[in-house]
Image 1 (spheres, rainbow, N blue to C red):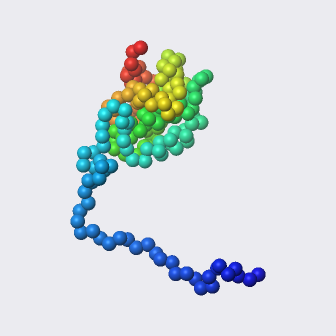
Image 2 (cartoon, one colour):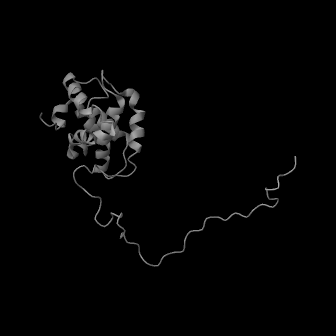
Image 3 (cartoon, rainbow, N blue to C red):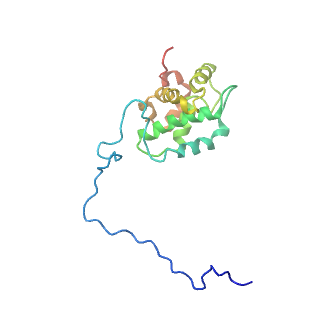
Length: 174
């Protein structure tokens, strides 16, 4: 078989990466999107910032088979709500989420062991449909129900306290 005419017979020289020339002046965060000068914005409905937050979803999905769900509870809703709590814990330490953050969030709401029936009723209302994007306020209510001070404890302490949900969760009275 002959060689097609559009294929060169001599190899083409490829150019390798070369870094740009060194800049003599310092870099400043002066563009509108840069937030380094003031730090991350804080306020209502802004969430908890931190690095590599999407990894928490992968960690939560790896624990999905261990979830103790009751009738009318859906894994997607549980993962959405608990990942948000796990991210709050990770950001309180200024780091990316770990499996301990996710385990703590699941344990606080009784999803890794058979739960108290009263907690099951509370969490059914809290987690209903929170995986839907238009239920952001409900997801924030889940996150706000667990104080940052509590989440700053060691993960072993949080896992031990998981049965004491009444003293852990700050639920709004309806």
